[in-house]
Image (cartoon, rainbow, N blue to C red; front, side, top):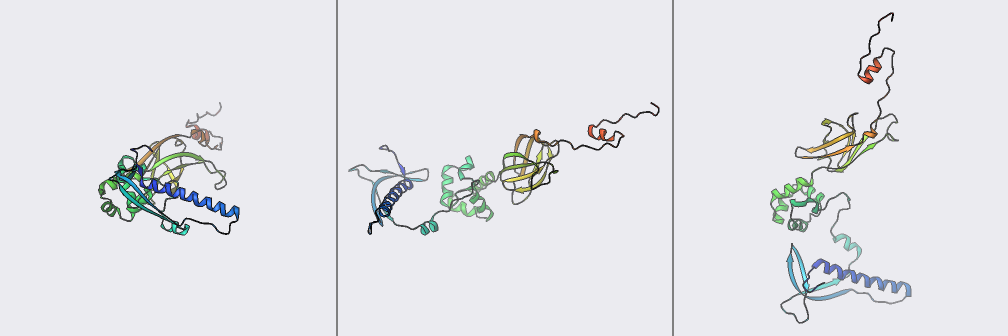
Amino acid sequence: MTRDATLRLEDFIQAVQSQLDNAQAAMAIKARNLNLPLTFAIKDVNLDLRAHVDFVDSEIRIRPAAAGEKETSVFHLVFTAITRPAIEENAISFSTDPDDQPLDELGSELTTDERKRLEWAGVRTVKQFQEAEERGAVHTIGRVTNLPVDRLRKALERAAAPLVQRVEPVPPGVDRGALEPPLLRVTGRNLIRHGALPQVRIGDRPVSVLKSAPDELLLAPDDGQWAGELSLRSAPTLATAMSFDLEAFRPSPRPVSDPGDGTSVARATGIAPVPVEAGR
């Protein structure tokens, strides 16, 4: 750390906690391996820190003071023991959903300072942001964070935009009959909105949606819909598109029985049979 470098206050506290954890682990090893009848543990740690305080990008940053340096602030920190149940009860609940987006993915819709203000209000992920909208709490969040409601709604609209990540074939399997035609599976994010089926088109023609979920769709394409551009619209102003080519997985035409008059050939090829005159 250079002389003029600053450190986030939470990083400093985490560093001290980590070293105290290491000290506690070392004492535990000593007690277990040496079978000591009595040992000692740290209950409370008091620490006075003289530092300069800066406020950068909505973060408190500290720069430790040099020896004899004046006009510094004093931080009086007390570290005390805490049990696992107390940690679980009081710690911030972070999302365990791997598909939940952090607020950083909202891009330019919100500045770093605005995202930090949302975190202060307890909104740390896009899912929490959307749940707040569903509860009608956007105006409240705007007042608490001093952010314009219009900007919050624009950011929410961006967060709700659908995203197609993958299009893949689903061959007939155990769950479906062996003679069933193959289907298409679309995976992504925000594929449906408020439980309503999205409008899905392939090659400017609608395609049947057999199953829908926010992260997956099951489609039944026609013969000419195994390649091209897949477009999806989950709301009038929310749409996305993706090009794909799965022509190699397109099912072969089913054979048509021939009654002997050439009509099966006509159906299969689109060429009308030539009539044969009697006696020739």
